[in-house]
Image (cartoon, rainbow, N blue to C red; front, side, top):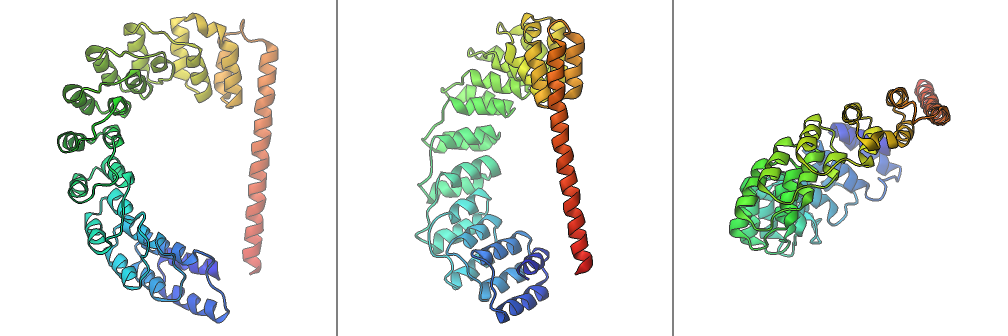
Length: 357
């Protein structure tokens, strides 16, 4: 019956929730520990506010702060006020963080005005700026709260490409940033942020900037860094990229070369195009590590890729290697077959139980 009440709450069937509530209490049953919090969170998350009010107003055990932080996260100020009137929001942690992180300025202002003991952490600043990009919330926090600011805020903002906030932090805050700021902006593919940091900040970047841009296929950033910055890249830029355009450009313009890691990356992740490229360039290490690459394909059950390696590197791959790999694939296939058989058996039991009910 507790499970039925959970399902009714998910669907917002208040009449069913009320009836099951009465039945449970007549039988002396109640939701498990934190069950009231779980039901309240479900009702709020699904927008069933009548059901949420019922849970708050009746005999459900609610913790002193979990529910309010969830309300703050979803921006439900009316529910926060209701919990406040029921004295269910004692404690201090998490509320401002959740409201700010989700960009709910009106909730943030109410909590600040009515819960003087509320505190916030770096989560409020970094998540508001990085994930949500709500500049107005950032400005309010700057004017009204001093805890939680740190040097990593601009790092995270740049990673998510919020140039307006990066510029505002540069002008109005004193924490500054680190080389990770440009590194992460490059990794995220945010060329305008990279260019702005280059022009306005002195921290610079590291080889991780071009490595990250190369790995995630941001060719324009790789080219820009190559032209305007001196840090360069490491073999990681080539070893871990899966972009043909980036591979070709790095091959033509960078002194660093691929290593055996490139073969391992392509084989483990099933990157056909990368292996084709490496073979076409006839790089020396490719033949040397063909056997290891075959082993990676078998471990990850990339059967077609393993066949391609056998066909193109027959001198480096012995029949014994192929047979050992095939046994791995058969074992993996056997395990999956057992899993699907077990899943089907469970479904049959469930259907039989429903039919007999």
